[in-house]
Length: 495
Image (cartoon, rainbow, N blue to C red; front, side, top):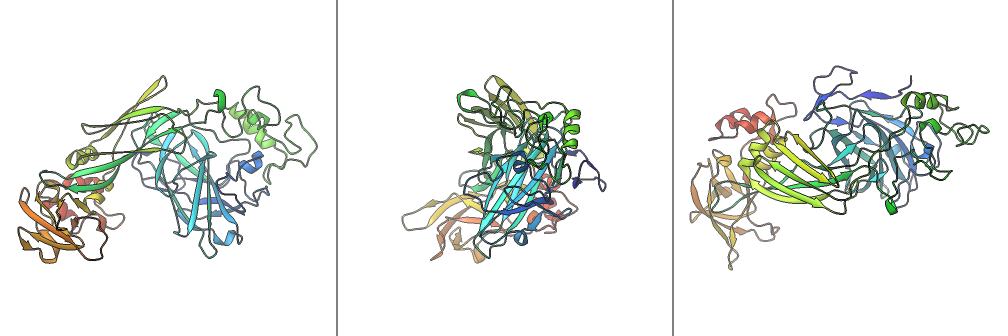
């Protein structure tokens, strides 16, 4: 078969073995097959450089990097590559990601605390790879390389997933996502970059604040402005996609197109003595590579990644503007903002609660997307920052009003001594059940030796985070039930 080791990603509702179109908001996609090698790697360098054989790993192929071994566990996202790693060497894990069109995905990589992590997408460094982040895949084939290192005895474990819950960016006409994860690529097919574009991530809810004098919680958010595409070289020259050479480029570089893919016998497509350039155990003479190239035609060189760009992000009727003038692929720039909780909830309940307008160079674009409800609910049940005022005696004081979102719940203060309306708060309970609209005076004194995080509280009742995976009720339904006295929400979570 031409497509070896291909796995059709099973998204919501798909049958076994089917490659399907999934709406935005589908379940996580596990990266469940990798080619793994062990090698000495210099800090900061991309290990996959040099010949096409080195840049595009193939199973059992001996290259300067090492021998690539297939490690596959269908449907699993977590692997331990320790047994494939030699002492004192780094672990290289590589996968091909095939997308039906240019599309955004959320990539989450996880490693042991003792391990170092570096990652490259299509040969471009991903900054801060430990943090889940949105990436843009090119229509066609993409390369993902992960490098793990660490002290002796540190497990080389990796978990990796993709999710289609992303920001309001340009999407394909169908509004769906098609992605496959594959350990190998068809001979002659070379990955490309997406068309140059500016994107914005879905906002992350970093905290909720309960402030005196306000009738609603305030949500702090963070979102990323990013650029994607091939990087522009010095003097305006374009650095093209892997395996694609600009017309007129000097000889000896990468091939101008898959038509000129190296054959056994050297990089000269007209033919040379056999034995110089090994195409791999599945295509020793390069015949299949040339057949694929003939069918696919010459590659399209796409526009470069914009260096400057801006976005106006809208959540409900709240607007946030971000701009950058030195953007680089794989290195997003983060921006912060805040909005009332009810506006955040409103955005997450709308069909397309996130909208954006982009500008870069002479181009502009618009996008929209639904906002995930689960992160909003997780924030509701996380720590609440209380905006009390610190006095010279070390006591924090202020008057709070119970907002709608806390009505009916028991709210307990964290790590310290609390009083409500002048009386000690038993077990730190500030109100329980909290009566919507009630006002009360709060005092807080931090506990000796505790971390100085200021006054914080949280809901003590059962909620969304306590539900098992696959619960019958969805995060969207729960967020919709979070209104009035929140009785329906508490019933749904069994509180």
